[in-house]
Length: 157
Image 1: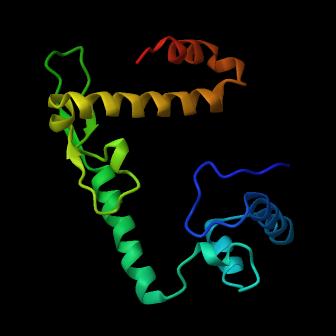
Image 2 (image 1 turned 180 degrees about the vertical axis):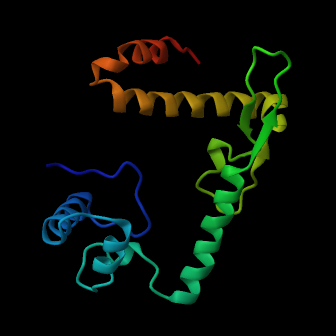
């Protein structure tokens, strides 16, 4: 199997080495979980060792940032139905514009800001289209999703 990074994690080793390491762990342990990956990567000789922060005080701070991102990603605004035929909708309250996703100090914006700022709106639409294309790539080999793939391909941004 040939491995490649979709996005490079922090201190990423060669993707092929990482993939083969994970395959070996899976074979040896009978499966692979994030917990097993951390246990195995704790060994200094593991090609995955440097992907992790092993200083517990630094790791705790980094994990709190992950938790803060979850709060920002998972909080939604409730849109009540205006008619009996409509359903309640939920949309993300805060969004990380595509250009700031890699910048930890960058600010999230509200959906209202995205809708009212032309540049943010266009950037967010491009981001959504990329996400749709990623979904399309995942499902295109399944006949059950042919109509979904065609609908995604019809979206022009």
